[in-house]
Length: 98
Image: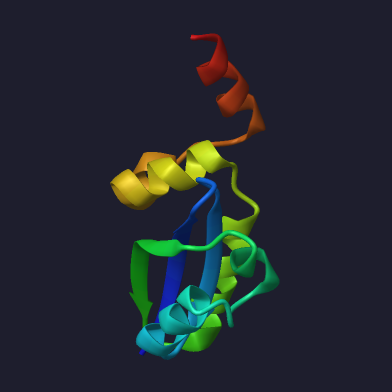
């Protein structure tokens, strides 16, 4: 079992990661032993968690989600993949104008 996770940091930003041991990894982040990004933005809390059979799949999704905007990440956390289907730079610009 592997996990893709999104943490909400104290400054309201999001951190995206993947791991095979979610409990241990979350404890590391919360103790300031995770990434340099989260270490500077403590405390952190788990905002979203997804399960995968293989760490390679979780890692591939980590890289994909890391490239998303804040709005797209929030839509994904709220509604899953269906909520972000069709999102692109053009779609985001259109949504801002509406």
